[in-house]
Image 1 (cartoon, helix red, strand yellow):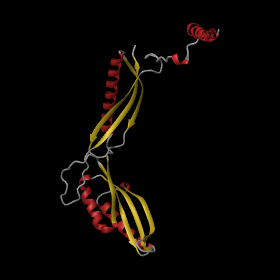
Image 2 (cartoon, one colour):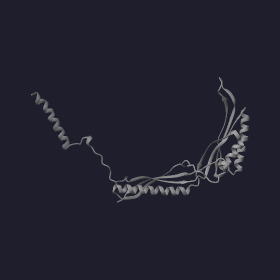
Image 3 (tube, rainbow, N blue to C red):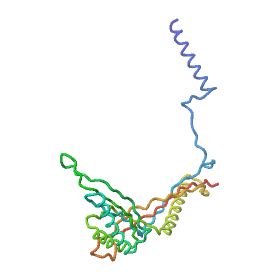
Length: 247
């Protein structure tokens, strides 16, 4: 009798499981998710095309300025103003337009010597920084030499960067290349899926910042001047396109 009592619950559980599988709800673990057909609303083929065109920079921006140390703040301010005026005069004589010269920072602060047991006031430092846009790249090195010679040890050059302002034609070429790239990718994907590529449904353009120059030796530079080599920069356009599935 004890064996019969143990077997009855097991049989009952087996019958219950069979009833659920045959006539009722499928357990969650057995549920399946089906993908929508390719021609359903909102579907399609989405790709990203890239167009890249290289060109020579036409503008050089130089971050330069003066940094003067004086015994008093008034002396440092006066000396820095005189030196900055000389630098600006040189730029004006070289044909740098006022719109291509911009003051980016100006500061006056005390300077201390911390090498001893107690800090010691050395003087007051005045810095005046400019961003100067140069359009004659062949003369850029000679002009920088004139500026640094005029200011001596008190002139500082923080860095230079190239840019491409006249880039409309390059943008158009890069945009065409990006579209052709996107179209070719979409056609290949459609062929692999065994469907026909339809019309474009949406398109978003993305412009990359001008890339860093690839340095290359330039021609006709004055051998006695600081060499400035613009190299090349890339104009990059990317387009995100979604195509419909054709009928």
